[in-house]
Image 1 (tube, rainbow, N blue to C red):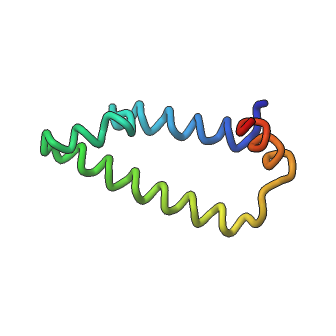
Image 2 (image 1 turned 180 degrees about the vertical axis):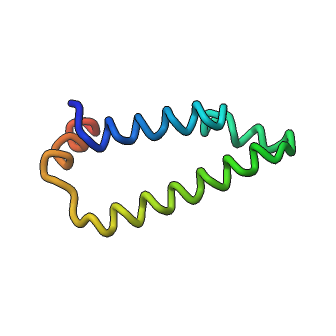
Length: 75
């Protein structure tokens, strides 16, 4: 099911990947290259995750439809 958070998250993910040139999974091993671009990307990744958690906390409880989707995924 397509939801606004899914589409918005995919758009932000795609733009970030396009600008930085790193996939989040590939950026962590790339830290070993000691390139400053990698460190900037990983720092932005951590800050983005913390900001997303804060926004989720401020936005209140999750919608019932999303909770039902999560239950369906677990089965």
